Length: 412
Length: 157
View 1 (cartoon, rainbow over the protein chains, first blue to last red):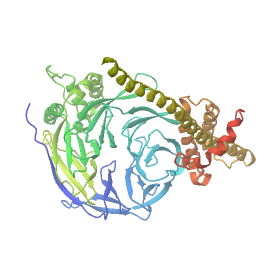
View 2: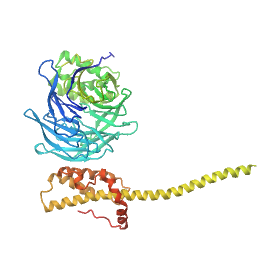
View 3: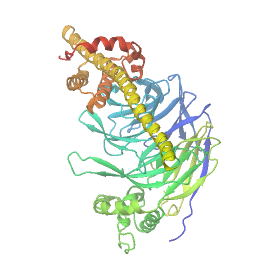
View 4: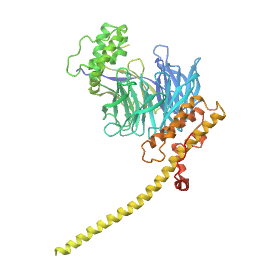
């Protein structure tokens, strides 16, 4: 196995916020980055059209929330932005004629709202807060959001929520050390699973959860200094029921509480912690096979097919592990044949899942003092490979570029 | 010689056994009293909360009849779900496992309806979980009066 070289290079520091930056969100088309802060504003950053000028602040959303804005989230269509605040409300903003305007305010939480997340289908909004509840809102007529259901399953402050990328499934995590999965049963939301308990669940506050881009895995990070990866499986029934089981517990890398986690399109995990560092984790064996396939594909076919089918390809190759010869000719197909390629890979995915889960996780690189204080949020760009944004208690937003083996071949 | 030491050791043993018996007896007595007081308080709190929700539902239904259109139709599902929970509520089965689950469901639906009406829990004289502890102060007198009668409280709609 060749040694992989991984690095996270600083690209730019975005200054402007006058208090800690809590959260970041890339717009779905990747042209904008929203950051929200204790200074009660949201800043929208966009890349300057002038070559080499980098990112600059294009808009400041203010005068709405009366306390810190803890979380922000784009609608799937990129037309709206939701902001969750310690003032107990969630505001919905819309870009109209180049100006961001607040079009709706969701009230109901008894105290601080900690997170807001739009479902990928765009029909649901979920919020969670210190009042231990998770609220589900449904989009009604004319940009109205109606409260659909209020769930009291957690016994403590709910820190964060994350939607599955393709199904109506929400994960929530809490100060009560557990992660709960919520699914839609007609118009009611039910807790279908709670990830907790000795040897399986976290032993302290779970700060953040994130589903992988293909929805087959869930990552969670906690005050117990571990990063846990769970595999998500669906039963055969109608409707299919989800079930998560612990696939890996990565410990010993963080000395302080881990606050944030995010998956890249290539299956890398970025974390930010209370020791001011950003660390990247990956499964080197899977990365190498993906890189090899990508290199071969770049030589012969449409490189644009790589990033989206990259993980599926990785899964198909992993099906051959361990020890058996790699299947020959498993090249990622050009875009027009992509559906056929994905179908074949999906058939092998069940076997691949065991290989994926078994492949060891390693810390690929670690940036000490990424910020001068706690790193509150890390987010990978939705499409540009290796572009990572981070936000910290130092009031700064930083952009980084990840470089690893296979990056050169798959460079877009 | 043996006799002397035996009786001394036995004396200690018998004191230990007597102490254990006394402790158990007294413990059971105080434990029962404590448990009874706690049960009374918790029962009152749960009764208060469930009663509050039942009252609200009854009031909303009456409002719907007298002033059609006053309650938005989108809330029908949540109000109906509350009615369902209230009818099933095991008020007289303290060991029923559903006790807490149904209460949580009621809380959730109640908040959903309030949000739909544009109101907060404070507007309705909060009976939400956070305030449940505060209402305990007047519990003993209220509970004593209630414990006399065995008539089931009618939650019929």
